[in-house]
Each structure stands twice: as structure tokens, then as C-alpha cells.
Image (cartoon, rainbow, N blue to C red; front, side):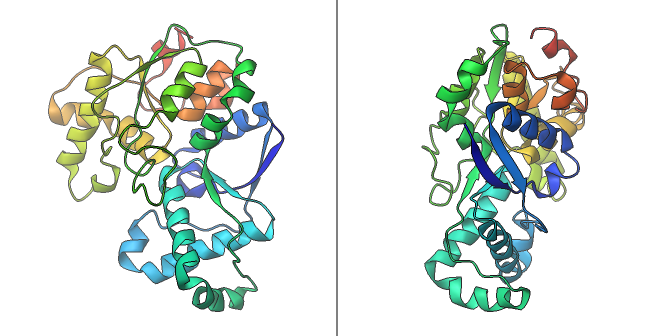
Length: 287
């Protein structure tokens, strides 16, 4: 495809969900997308900083956008929360806050002019199916996959706005392009519980257990999410959620780019498939 982006990995891809970064970079390389990491990027705030100090969060994300703009590239991220925070900041800047925030950026020799836009790897893959689908080497015809969009991938619609937030279809289109069968579950647009796991642990566990349980009951071999925070909640906390709610049975959880990588024939090691809490062995045996 020969596309180039300023890559914003965010904290989670740089740490706890490093396998998502591995898979994203492997898939991008295979389909001809060049990802150039934004030098000196900082945390997007993950909606937590925004609650405590919205002005500091706005300035931090304006800086991230200005750094990308300096590269002459649009921003691409593989985290739904990062996409939301960066897009929210951009929208705020474009709606009257550019001048005063740029005063603060000037102390770091930076300025944001509004040219760098922000996109999500989900949207890129959905928009370019016609380009990468012919590259599929291992159609995943034996897999049934339940999509889990979560909150920040589609909401709020005025900020994210890629598709109908009540009836999104991008993930199902990608699943189909990979040769697998999409499975619709009632939890696909619900919160995973990540942002509530500490203040409301039992509620978060119920959300996690429900998604995993419904995927399994509807015949899905795995859950699929485009957000590493959702993946952390659904995978890392799934054992605790099962114990807390009494809902048994494991449900593997894949990052979006891991599924695409499998279909493209990328080696399992390069996709980080052994790094999950819930084993992917049974799933991989079907691929």
C-alpha cells in the first residue's frame, strides 16, 4: 500500500501489551504500511489525567500532535483510548484553543497548525481490505470470532465518528476478509470494565465474565478486540472474573492485528501469541 504514518504506540503497547505492538508492526510491514514512531511522545492521559487536570492533558496531547506534524505525517495508533484522547485534543484545539495552547508549546519550540490527523489501525485495515485481503495466505475458515468493540473504539460518536456507533461493522468485515466467521454477541458494544477495575472490581469482573461467557456460548473460538486496554481486561482479569462470578471455561482473546497476522501467514512468535494469560493453544490448533 506504501503508506506512512507517525506511529503513536502509547503506554500500553510499550509495556503490558507489548504483543499488540509486535503484531501491529508485523502486520504493517507485511501490507506495506510504514510506521515511524513519534520521537519523544508522552502518555495520552488515558482519560484519567483528563479527569484530574484537563489543561495539562490537552497540552500534552497537543505536544504529541505537534511532534507528528513536524514529521509531516498523520498519526496512527493501535489503542482505542489513545485514539480518543488524541482526537478529542485535536477537536478541542481546532475549536478555538489553538492559540493559547500553542503559547505553551512555544516554550518547547513546537506549534500545532492542525494538519496532523489521527486514525486507528482498525480503520486503516477496514478501509484497505481490498489491498491486503489478496495477501491472505492462511484463511481462518475453521475459526468463529466474536468481535468486542468496547467503549472508546466507537464512542463518543462526535469524536470517533468512523462508523455507526450503534451498529459498527468494521471488525466483522475484517474477520470475514481473514476467512473466519463473525459471531455477534450482546456484549460487543459494552464496556470491558478496564477503567473501573480498581474502584468497582466486582462490576468490572461481571462485564468481563459476561463477554467471555457469551462468546463461548455462541460458539466463538475467541474474542477479538482493537483496544489493548480491553484486551488487558478481558484476558488478564478473565481468571479473576470467572472465579468471582462462577462462570467457567476459558475464552482466548486476540488483538485485532494478531488475527490479521495469522491470516497473512505471519509466524506466531512475531505476533506474541504466547504472551497471553488465557492460552491461545487450542485456538491456534484450528488455524
